[in-house]
Length: 203
Image (cartoon, rainbow, N blue to C red; front, side):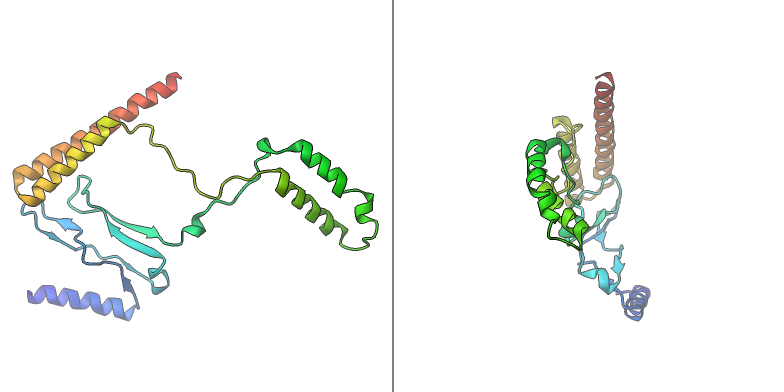
């Protein structure tokens, strides 16, 4: 290992230990040289120890037109990302709601209660609402990619094939072919979105 490179690595280790930082990298390559096809992990992802176990670090296999592979952080605590359920009043059983209110909330309900009547009223009303008014799902809605079609799928596959060909046989020509295919893919996606947007505006 070159002395200069070793010195830079030593500096990074000192900074990491001095500031009590954690390194997310797992030896996955994050950079590919456009001329030689050689790869390395020149991008470092550091974080506080309090966050280290909350996220999962990963590298995308597709360059997306760059010479750097995109890196992602995925939040592990999926439960914290759940939506807060909301009352779905449009689907409520108002007839049953009104009937139960007349049965459970009347003069007899509070006849023997001298204190905390407001809390009792709220508790009973909430109980009735729970069994007569549905709530929205806590799971986030999955967005449908209406602009994605077979042409987009084939264009993406061809782009990946060109990238794999460059990895197997690094050359300027193969890298150029990959860049051309990437530009074609971007144009195809943009054209599809434009057509879809035009149809939506006409409708």
